[in-house]
Length: 235
Image 1 (spheres, one colour):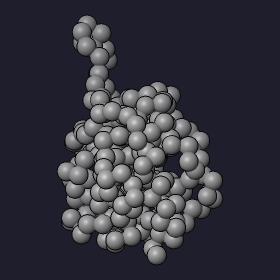
Image 2 (image 1 turned 45 degrees about the vertical axis):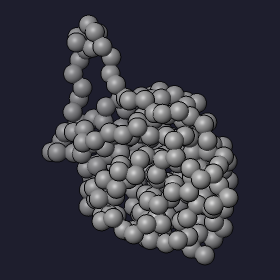
Image 3 (image 1 turned 60 degrees about the vertical axis):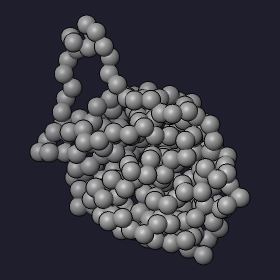
């Protein structure tokens, strides 16, 4: 079996225990006089990301997928794709999303139901369905299939997945169970299809969003995920 213990791999990505949360809210700026008089955003930086995390974005990266969590304990988030043109980052697309059922953490552990805060490369993709034209290496396999003893709303979660390179072996299929930092630090954290509520640690978006991202994220542009709740991202 490709993923070793399928239950371990899939539960990390959000099975029946990943419920909770409502529709994600849009990421928006302020309004009124304060918004009109505030300094313009620096186009050389990813918006609403502080120096600490900004410095972790590789200098050669030209695609950043930013996940703005609504709150430390919220399962609602917004995913925004930024593309670098010259020295400026430009907003390309955005989508409503969900993250861990219990929110976010800067010290992720197996089973905490929180998504890890940080900057992570995006190297590999796969899923139950055939390759939709992904630029990242794509592994199609029935081993991604969510068990049918899970709630029916979760059955298609892993039709498409993109591995988030947290505690995993880059260059391997997303469901490879290897965890370099050890089992206790969790793993098998993916960007996958949304089931309408929070996950066990992954980030989830709609099927059209997954198809777009699979066809757009380009290894030659060194894509990374910048993810966390808004407060931690700005810190």
